[in-house]
Image (cartoon, rainbow, N blue to C red; front, side, top):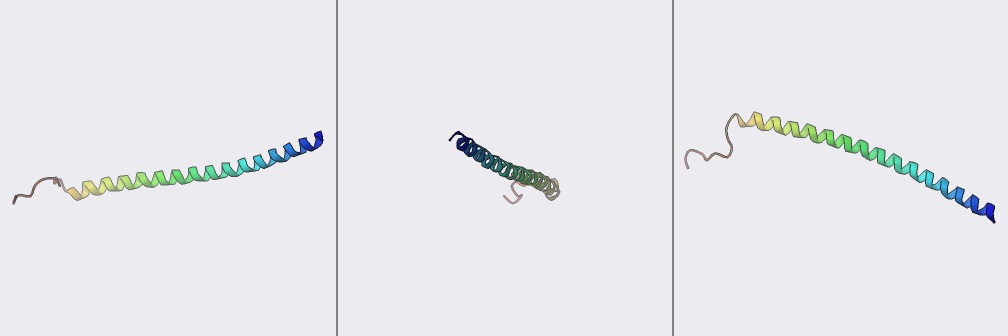
Length: 68
């Protein structure tokens, strides 16, 4: 009876180790995806800043046109 209990615990430990490794791979993949998304956000933010400074031409977009 005691040997069966030890074998059962070893089986459970092996399954938990496999699950832990699988979850670790998933977390690592998610971190890589987060890193890529952050890089994309930084690039888009810089692109938006450059477009806003190029497009304004020194004009203030909030100014009322002269005919008002």
